[in-house]
Image (cartoon, rainbow, N blue to C red; front, side, top):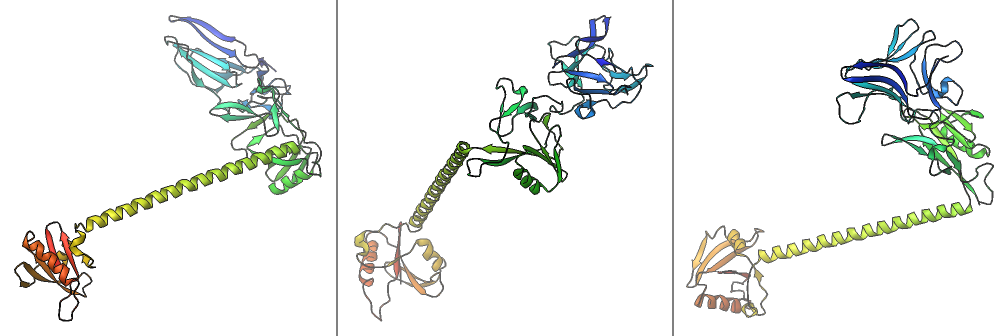
Length: 423
């Protein structure tokens, strides 16, 4: 079995008119992550990547070329940036990247995140920026063993992030990759006096090195119930109708899209923890009530302001609808209906049907808007001097007089220069 150590190994060097050109492999990450050709004693020509500090088993591999052939398969990078595998006879059995421009430098690097990338950089290009030409493109959480025991990898904003599950803290706050440890013991059953209580945390699409001590065919609800009753069980993986019970520590945790499994972890709270949790919940509830009350107050103020606006608008509209200016002495204590000029114009159909003419005005026939009461509208034509005196006299005398042989005064119009009496 052949090993490729990716520590600045040059595959070839040649001179060009543009200067020295190099294509090489470079290892920037953890030295415990190497490339191995083949698995087993015989070798099968398969290029596989996995942590070198664990046994070479297929379940620990996180990328492979999936090639099959005799031993002595070599990984090559030519001057045009083509990455490929050759067998012992020199036959190309797989291309990983296409041919590029010979005026570029190429670098195959095992980066700090344990992922393989082929970079290119133009010989005449300014700066030190290298572009990614090829990568197997696995998830950044695919490499096994990125983080220590009991820690799991999640991808956030295209970056691999080490996370501890609920009930765990980092072994070293400055070095999260070392892993996590429990901040309280969850071994054994919780106390019967209520001083401790177990709750379950569920993590979707999270997997680990599966090494169960018990496998049961259960539903998800039954798996949760069985897990809580088993005082020795510390974690469970529910997947494909199987409840796989585990014990800590667990390693190789990672979040994978497409994984249908659910990780269930038992978290134990003591009396102080439960009190803090209860206080926290009460505080959250109090904040919720306060926020709801504030929201209702704001809503009530908005409704009140809107109602005041509508009332004010209605009053202004009413004021404009009946724009009259009458002195108290004009009508004295007489209760008469006030009309606008436009209302009487509509009632008389534009003052077209003449009933009679007097010294101070003309009388027209009309009908109120309800169509049931006929009226006579006297329009005073001399609105100054004697006409205004006549208007006052008729309103003062007729408005208070009630006789069967006398036409009753219903109202009046005192709209700007218009003076009208309604009988």
